[in-house]
Image 1 (cartoon, rainbow, N blue to C red):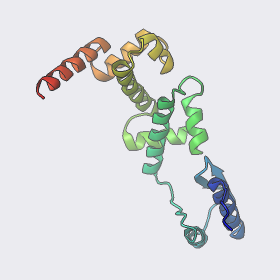
Image 2 (image 1 turned 120 degrees about the vertical axis):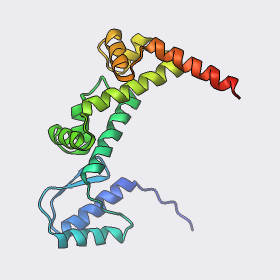
Image 3 (image 1 turned 90 degrees about the vertical axis):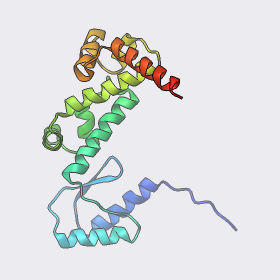
Image 4 (image 1 turned 45 degrees about the vertical axis):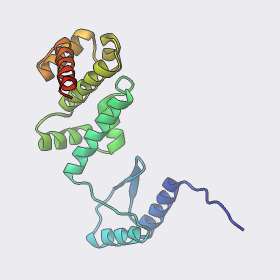
Length: 186
């Protein structure tokens, strides 16, 4: 007789973590599925026991260093812009909820590693999305401004010029000329 296994991997991992952390009497919190936050100081010995217990199930416990956190922030901002969720929720709230740290802590870590602010990175990501949209989607600037949470078309245009050094029209002409030259060379 054959049977199919139906299961939710996240629930299995959560139950396993609950069992292991309970056995070691460690207080923790699960944040966004695959991240756990240990809410107390943990000895190196207990941490080694937890890691060893998880490794038996092919689960690796990695500590988040500052560079990982910066990459997580970048990933979260890019995903937020990609999904078009820039109007519905404040970026600071989304980052805090998803990464489990205060926004001031995230902001300090980000700027100390990248020498720019999260807000500047957010603008750069949105400008990259603007480039993509004007080239591929033929969307109106008013639609792009609304979707990417610019207050107006002039605000979008000013940010675009500030970041790229070109107006949107100049950028489109430059890209079309570049395409024409590359297709002529092939």
